[in-house]
Image (cartoon, rainbow, N blue to C red):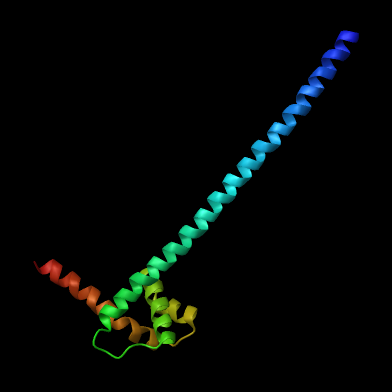
Length: 125
C-alpha cells in the first residue's frame, strides 16, 4: 500500500512539473499565432496599397494631358474602378458609392472603351 502511495505521489509531482513546461509551449504557440495574424494584416494593407497604386497609374495614364483631378474625385474614381475591376455592375457601383448611375458610367467610359479597343485590335491580327 505504501508503494502505491509513493508511486502516485511521484506521478503527481512529475505531472505538476510537466504542466509548467506545457504552459511555456502554449505561450510560444500564442506568440506564433499572433505573429502570423500581424503578418496577414500587414499583407492585406500592402495589397490594398498596391491596388491603389495600380489604379492611380491607370487613372494618370488616362488623364494625361487633362487637368489634374481633385483628391475627392480621384478617390471616387479609384473606388469606382476598383469595384468595376472586381466585376460589379454599374448599378451596384452606383448604389455602393451613392452616386447617380449615369455619373458612374461617365467615369468608367474612358476605361471601358480603352479595354474594348485593345481586345478588338488583338483579335484583328
